Length: 451
Ligand SMILES: *Cc1c(COP(=O)(O)O)cnc(C)c1O
Image 1 (tube, helix red, strand yellow):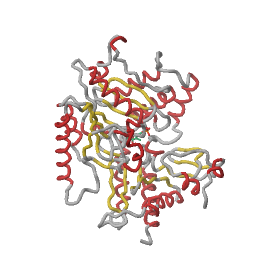
Image 2 (cartoon, rainbow, N blue to C red):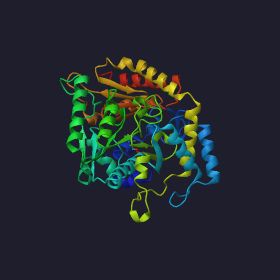
Image 3 (cartoon, rainbow, N blue to C red):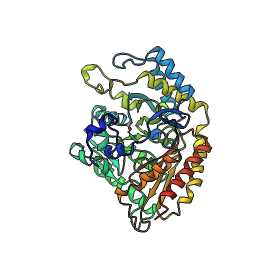
Image 4 (tube, rainbow, N blue to C red):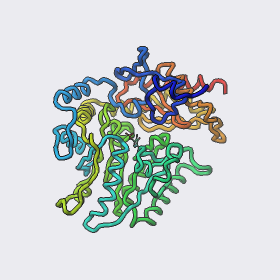
């Protein structure tokens, strides 16, 4: 088959993200035209259970009356006004609400529109903060964890770097200090979780000690590294990281773009260890998964370091045109109100148990190396050979075959590399979570039946 882009542009004018269009065009995935509660609906009126919460965003389902009407009310007032030189009522109200629900000490909200931009803002704030402190310091280095993912802009790729995604851009990226992820899985040969964890702590301490005068911040996806394949950190790591960073005047940036808004069982993952980061990045679930809005929260200590007369040149010269968009803010306020009034974190605990129980038949399967899970974040690690860890030939697209099999059965899941991801919405009811897990097991077993 030849691939003439001219033949396909009329039907496929959209260049999809993270997508090999040549395969995509042949496969012609469903065209989604609507949603209802936890379902997506295509142009042939087929329904699919949204098993990845529309890429880890959706919280209360689709077309939630409270969020819908908040946005409609806002449309009837104003859809966009700038935060450059003007204020807006909804951006103030949302900031107040965010300050009150996030860990104590985060008092200021800088808005942007994506997870990646919330991280970019965090990195620049960290560098400028150190330069503007009472006793200024030139700190220019960031510490990152291996297999971290913080978005796809150049700064966020620099502190992330997943080899498959990013190798072309290496010449553009700034240098960082890399420490091993204590959630790495499977473990290197001969290590137990405990010995590996001790190794990770030691390497973290050494890196910080060696570079303590140069490090501006450590950036981490707290508790769970999502895109890495659901790498769950052992309890205590975040606490120890907070101690070390505080001790050396290094900022701690928590990227809760994925884990925030309930996914690990607490509203924010940092709350599992009662840790307050210096900077907190939020996006994905912030608007209930409706609209592109992000927030970078900081302590007053950081905010204050940017104050002074214009001549002092302490201004944070950074922003995006749609910063603090009122429709996004209205959706986010409605989302936080729903968190305050509905027992959804209890649902996360229930869903966690259902997923664990219903996926357990896969644990003994010869092609499942392990299932990693925290809250409603699940990664099923698929291998050709469990003993050697050999993966399937990528050209077989085995993981994707499972995704397609699930789609035939009316369920949307997604694979990244050799890992199959399940990420139900925080508020997905138990019977649908059960269906999600059951269809995953059936689809997996069906695809692997001949091996
Ligand atoms: C998705 C994600 C991002 C990037 O968010 P975008 O809105 O896609 O830019 C950043 N950090 C983490 C941890 C994420 O999971």
